[in-house]
Length: 485
Image 1 (cartoon, rainbow, N blue to C red):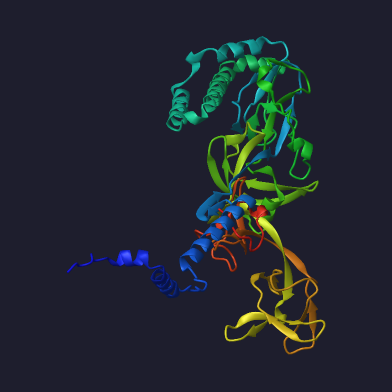
Image 2: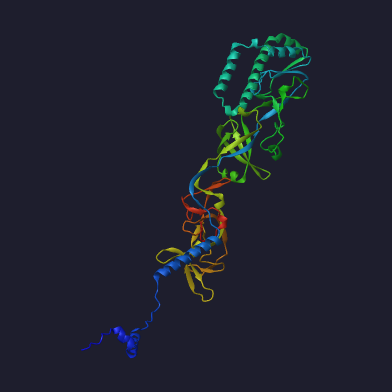
């Protein structure tokens, strides 16, 4: 028997349209549409928040002024001050009684007694010529005189400091004067008979001081000035000059011949600023340093006032001869050194505060925080706030406007008394602490300052501490300002 060829399912599918439609229909019935809800993607949210945060900080950085900071350090500022001092002595000018040739017999800045011959005047010049010649004859120097001179040279050499080389010239002049004195005294002795004859003929005169003292051969017009009679013009004189009297070999009657200083006590007047005078008001002694030679001593003093200017009157009882050739000298007042927290002056600013009487504060809650009771003007109810206290004095606390505003009414505890905020205000000096990323005003107590830095007291209430970070420019910062570094 013939067998029909087998057909696959594909052939059946192709040749039977009905069957094909049935299969497609079944397939379509199995495809269902699934409605999905909103899926919350946590990763996207985190990423979005980070982007917003970055954008905010970028915007803040470009729209705000970065604040430079300074870390508070321990420091010291020496409060030594250098001022010009005017020297006042008990001195008087001696004038010549005759005219003629002049010879000196005492070296400059020497102590003399009333029995010592200081100078001579020769009206015809014969004896003066012999005395001058004797002053040039070194063979007349005795061994004793030479020994004194050598001792003085050795003493100067051992104490020589090349920082003060000008002292060499001063010593040279003093040594020359000392030699002149020795030789002149020897000439008086060797010419004793001739001098006696000339004195009898009224052609030669020798003069002795009327009182013991120190002889100085220079005048400057300040001899009659006292600590009571001096003027500001004399103190501020920029054209000061001194006349050297030893340059004259002849003299006229009533010409100045030397100056006699009659007391070892002397004074120095120093014009000081008001703040220095105030700081010294409760003291009686002070340490000073002479800038020319570094000599330091402690002296008593008093304060004077002349034409609204304060003067320090230093009472000196030694070293008169050391500075006998000075009228003006630079003096350093050694006031010590102040140690504390060192901050730049640019960080210091002032801020105005409400000052609230202390008896209007009360303890509030478990924290015992100092609080205020503010009365609501419309309802009459009382709200309790705990403002930040920035400082205090005997009667008031200093608070800012964070919780209070001008015009608020504060009720006194256990009383019907009230106080209006803003009735009293005051300013405090301080800096802005930026440790926490925002500015907080902190009061400071100044100990000392110079052109760049200020030393403030450490560990003060409401103050700053070592290593705190503060705004370098205090005037550019406001309270609670967010700090961008």
